[in-house]
Amino acid sequence: MTFLKNHRNLAIFGGSPKINYTFKKYRSIGLKEVAAATKVVMSGNLSQFLGEYSPDFFGGPNVRKFEREAEEYFQVKHAITVNSWTSGLVAAVGAIEIEPGDEIITSPWTMSASATAILQWNGIPVFSDISSEDYCLDVAEIEKNISMRTKAILAIDIFGRSSKIDELIKLGKKHNLKIITDSAQSPGAVYHNHKASTLSSIGGFSLNYHKHIHTGEGGILVTNDDHLAMKLRLIRNHGEVVAKKLMKTEYNATIGFNYRLGEIEAAIGIQQLRKLDKIIDRRIEIANTITEGLSSLEGLKLPKLVTSKENVFYAYPMQLELEKTANRHTIVQSLRKEGVQGLAEGYQNIHLLPIYQNKKIYNYSQIPWSLGDRKISYDKGICPVAEYLHDHSYIGFGFSSYKMSRRDVRKFCDAFKKVWSNMESLKSV
Ligand SMILES: *Cc1c(COP(=O)(O)O)cnc(C)c1O
Image (cartoon, rainbow, N blue to C red; front, side, top):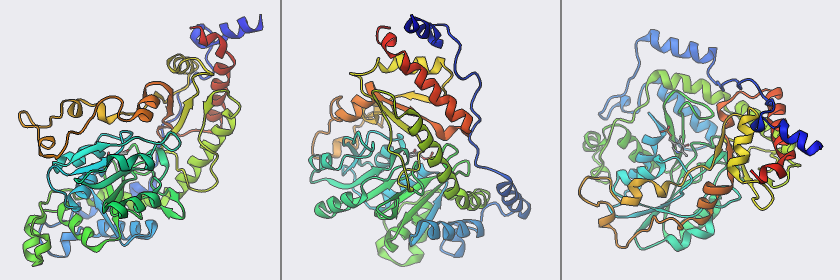
């Protein structure tokens, strides 16, 4: 009888929802950013970059100040700002000087730009499977994807955690591969005492408005290598002009773009970066509260409780153990009906996008794939863990989009508990 009552209680069966309001939108911009941006606007100096070798080749006062503060925060020799992290990724792949047809190993669980950055230089992305534990590249899977043409690993520090960077570096040394890290979702995350992206050949962060801190659009490249840093700065700012003046033949083959960050964005970025640690601490606190709140639910795999910045939680990842629960779609629909917002079924399987399935980025030619030494497969089945998680068991809570109060978190957990207490009836839906 109580079973039936509860069953009827679920919002998906017409009961009243646990949450009947929308969570507040996350916002990291405040009065400090307003003041900083206003000061730049009033100065009239909205950019000071010059595409020739001079002090202004390195940008205006706010760009340079932002970069020095980023070097301090991330503890790296060079921080180089760019107008988006997509630009940063393209610059990173260009800086390591691959040849058309060379291969770079990357993850299918990322935003599409990580892999298209490789295609921009006519490199060939090779997708290697992820670990179901941290959703980053499974290091044990990488080696079988290495060929004579592999030049680098582009690892993604997804959802707020660093990849296992020491193992990647070891593998890179063994096979003479550069390591590029995409920490767009993990700024300030710490792995074995080092911040994410600070041990790779080149790493970096997004300043897009979806991320922990932002400047609307923007990005930061980081490296400890002087040569790579110069190459990145040349690619950022019309390097083909500058290389001649540098009188260094090693930079002669550089093609540059305009990936420069504006002064307004840089001034806002300075303020944002100073807030990052506080933002991370708050994220961890909320995530831990959710983890504690949901820990008793059968068949729901949650992230570990976090005591340091090992996870800065861009998303809150969960997995269903489907032998113990109803199917994912039924559960997620039930949760949505209870008023839970920001849930996603699955994440990404980049290798299944049409450009990879058709191996075409130009109308006629099959470059870069036709320049390679071997046939690269993007067939379904090449990344079974990523595919299973995406198709069946992964649920993401995009809590970086919300400013969650304690009440929101409590209600969020209550809605999950309500759905779980009706799991038997949901199994038969
Ligand atoms: C956001 C994101 C990017 C792209 O960054 P933009 O600044 O939006 O260009 C790349 N990779 C990952 C993993 C991201 O989350």
